Amino acid sequence: METGGFVRVTNGRPAVGWRVWTVQERCDGVRLGSVIYDAVWTPGASAHASCRHDELHVVPDMTCNCGFHAARDPVDAFPYLHGRDEPSTLCRVLGTLSGMRFRFCDEFDGGFGWIVDEFMERCSHALVADGRVWLIDPLDGDGVEDRNRAAGDAAGVIQLLDRHNRDCAILAARLGVPHHVVPRVAIAPFQFIPIRMGRFWKEVALWWRERRVLVFADVLGTPDYLLAGRERLGVHPLLRLRPPRKQLGAIHPVAILCGHGAGLFDEAGAALREALSTSRRRIPGQAASAVRAWRASRAG
Image 1 (tube, rainbow, N blue to C red):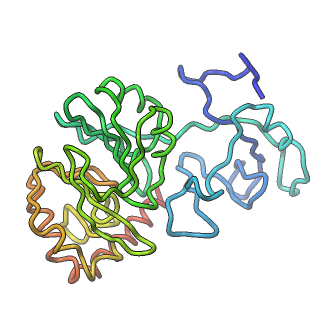
Image 2 (cartoon, rainbow, N blue to C red):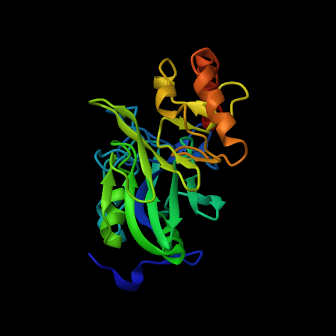
């Protein structure tokens, strides 16, 4: 349904989605709540969606119905303005939702990245080789496509992890380029290193030999919840007992880009060797860091 000029513009950008909230009178003040679930938004704090069926995957996920729902057009949200409410509900209101917040990062002469402002710190990258742009595990966002088009001609979308669907298929279709899912065969100028090829986890790392740039999806990352102690790069918790030392031991990168967290450009090779060689004995430290990071995210 099209509403034409009725869709208003906020801060120079069109509203991304429309949603109805309940206005509830609580003991700690008036709060916005969900019209369906027993969820209340805390003023000044970021709201984090979770999946009721699978707590392991990142929310939202295109293969699941989890996440915050909103209507593209306000008229489609109107039916939720009426319904049975709890005694504490004062009224229902219609408002807008903005898209995820991200910032550009990992800037270097061979590409750049963009990272989401969230606990998981999902990070996507564009690698530029010979004027052609390759998107690695990309998430879509306001300004992302324009930035990529300015960098060069779109060449393809590479998905390094089978469950990292993100917006890979959408962007590949929009740009009219191939979507490579967990590739094993080299795609010039990139090579791919198999990390896990199990039934439930298929992942490769991208190795750009000419530039000595190594790109990971999930196997290693830099957010606080993946690190132990003074680590700068951490092995995924499920791989710490058996880290991919054999696959990565002969690689000596000058830059490491990650699917979670900002990349490393300072002594990246040393950080990789340390992460792989100490992953087992630092399991308790990583578990403690994950708990601290989670508590900090909920408190802030």
